[in-house]
Each structure stands twice: as C-alpha cells, then as structure tokens.
Amino acid sequence: MHNRNLAYVNTRNQTSFEEDPFDLGLGFSQGMTTMCHARALELYAEELVSQHATYECEEYRLDLENLPEDKQSELTRLFLESIDREFESEAIHGNDFSIENDYTCALLAMLKDNNAETRERLAEVTRKNIIIWYEKSLQKILNDACESYLCYTNQESGLRCHQDEDHGDFVWSKA
Image 1: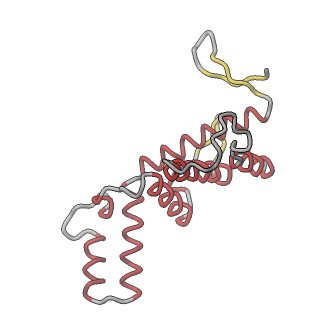
Image 2: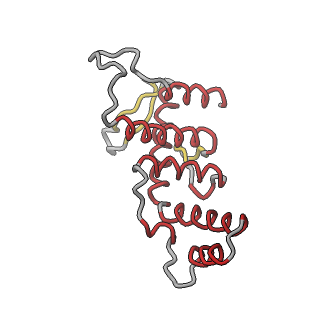
C-alpha cells in the first residue's frame, strides 16, 4: 500500500507544461500565484489522505482532528495562502468572543511581559483559534482529497465508475 501512495503523490505532482498544446510557455505570471497555492493545498491534502486516512465501507475517511498538530498547521497555512491571506479578523478569536477568551488573555499577558514564553503562548492560541474558525473549510478540503484519492486508487486497480441503472448510485466495477 505504501508504494501505491508514493506513486499516487508522484503522479499528482507532475505538471503538464511539457506537453503544451496551446504553446503558452512558462513565461506568463498573471494569476499564477493563486493557482499555485491552490494546487499546493490540493496536493498536500491528498498526501495527508495517502498517509493518514482510513479505508472503510469502500471510502477513505480523514478527520481534521485526527491529524497531528504539525499537519493541521501546515494544512491551515496552505489554506490561508490559497485565499491570498485574506482571512477574517474574527478567526483569531476562534469561536469564543467572550471578554476573557484565550486570545485576549494571551495578548494581554504578552503586552504586560513581552518574553519568549508569552509570545509563544499567543502564537499557539492564535494558531489553534484559526484552525477552529476554518475547521469546516479544512474538513471539506480533506473530504474532497479523500474522494480524489479513492478515484485514483480504484482506477489504478482497474476499476471504472458507472451509474447503477436501478438505484442511480455510482458504483465501481471491473471494466
């Protein structure tokens, strides 16, 4: 299974610029940044699925809360890059808008005594709150990556997807 995961990630990382039917070349840069960040996010999510997802009932499943902290942080960083760092300012508070929320307390502690420990606490609270705020978006990205990975692994196994005539469901079967 590990070799299949590596083959999948390597296949998805390949670009199609070598076969450029429209002769666009690599010299254009208009809009390139957004596309690259979105692609990096997509590839990273699929890599997470290949490494951490569970396969049950003919589908892959990966929940955000089951990922290690460093993987959650990187996924969130790539997500924020993909939206051009235009995140909502309320995100730093997470879902807690009370007067004594974790962010406000960490910020006040840092302002009172600016040292490495208080700065680290503020950074950790901010990171945690941003992940909480964008949890649904991040989970959707992981769900889409699970679906994409399932399609890839099924196609690599020689299966083809078709719609069942009786039920209307999409099923995978040998071609």
